[in-house]
Amino acid sequence: QVSVLHKFKGILFSTMSSEELLHALDSFDVREDDVFLVSYPKSGTHWIAEVIESIPNARISLTSPIELGDVSKLEELKTYSERRVIPTHLSYDLLPVNIKQKQCKIIYIIRNPKDTAVSLFHYYRENPNLPYIETWAAFFELFLQGEGEYSDGLVLKFLKLFFFFFFLLFAQDFSKSLKKITTFLGINVNDSEVNKIAQKTSFSEMKNNSIKENYDLSHTICALTSDRNLVFRKGVVGDWINYFTSKQKSVFDELFTRK
Ligand code: A3P
Picture 1: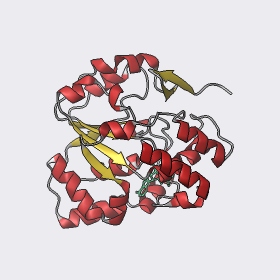
Picture 2: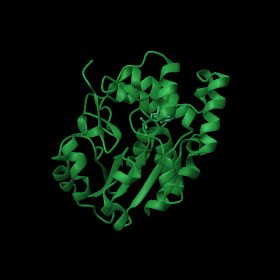
Picture 3: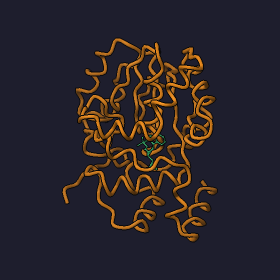
Picture 4: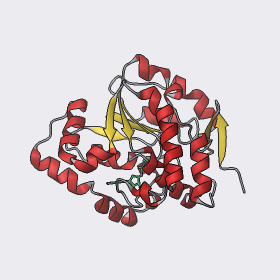
């Protein structure tokens, strides 16, 4: 099998992120009004990106992930004139230093790690940019070791720092969560706009649209694929229960508590 991953500073990346680009990230020209959409893969990145893009009069442009592509990415990002919303799966330590210096807004997406694991397992099986994994049991071990694409510890570094987008809370009370985001970004929305956004960004609507959409690289949000058909699998809270054995659950919970 052709290697689809490479290591940079001890972290596994898809070969779609060039080493040269990863090296150059610290020279990225950060703007003070940039918003970074940071997440561990499969936490709901496409969902919140669609939510933000659907806010009327937000005057923002969603870019592709900062770590996706080759070093020309940094030039490409300069061409945006509107406020940029930049998705990334980079760990805290690898984020361009200027983001922290300029105190840019960061939205960090959090999902139950058990659901994230199940979602990522399917992604490993279906995404040609990731190694193929035979069984859930094998993937579970990989995930626990933090040896898969992107290491763990990502969440811990971000804690206390930024605005958090909780997959669960969005699933439970969309309007309330949306209003928190728009307040954070300094944008006004009224109730009828909230309802429209809720409709447009529902799982079924987004899944249907992804089937209709043609391959459009400018719409890439995940550094691991530009194929949106791979993204909308089930879109529920708690699917982990269908995969974790009770032994796996206790091993996982023990590790989670320890970390
Ligand atoms: P599942 O594999 O559990 O279905 P990311 O965008 O970070 O790659 O995350 C993908 C996960 O978010 C997938 O989880 C996907 O189905 C879910 N998702 C995407 N859009 C969603 C939406 N509008 N509502 C609920 N879940 C959504």
